[in-house]
Image 1 (cartoon, helix red, strand yellow):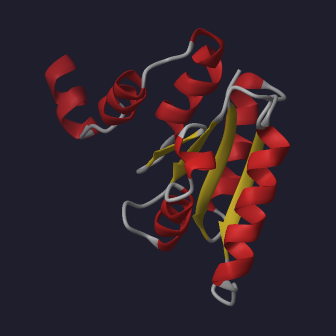
Image 2 (cartoon, one colour):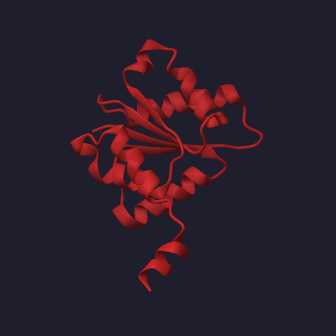
Length: 135
């Protein structure tokens, strides 16, 4: 089973993890990493590497980050320059609760990255229109 890291600006990753636990209870092989305004970027990368080692049981790790080309994404991406991480780390940006929930509930069956991203996109809707269409 692949490990999971939720990485974000501020406490978003911690909040998302808290919400995940409401649906799934305790989740194995998961860690969060929050970039604080005063953070040292080298320290962030070091912590990321530590968390990868912590959650990787040999099947690799999926890192969900909050923002494409944001600092957590860019720093995670730097690891992919190292062959060690190219084979074991997947990075998915724009994390939201539907995609991470889908991933945590189906990761023993190795969900595809395309399926996970599709679920994340499907979870974005203009509810006013949905409600109007149902009346």
